[in-house]
Length: 167
Image (tube, rainbow, N blue to C red; front, side, top):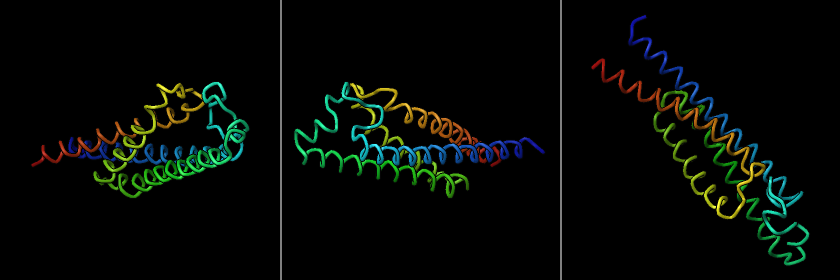
């Protein structure tokens, strides 16, 4: 095996592991969305949050305004759908695009995840909602995704360098 073959094999391995990790992160988001959905109909207040962070319980929100409770519930259900949708998109892009070496699928997955997290996370911090119980699973999912991202960037830039070097 010459150096070019070794680069290709390493690059293919990086693409494969990138796809697997990004798909795993997508599966994690789907699981989180299901949990988010279930919590809405059981305790109502989001996973990992309590009256200390929100200033309310399910009962106090209902007592204040049943319509407001229903409004918040509908937002949480809708959000669980969007979280699951991003997770499904990551799995599909990873397994049927990234794994086949498609750069567009890799960057589509990256941009989708970055936009979702970039919009969803920031307001947790100033509002005092960034508890480990609330965001811990998302942080773990982000670490898995980040590892897949790093492997993908290395693999796809390695392919580009290998192709340029052989020209």
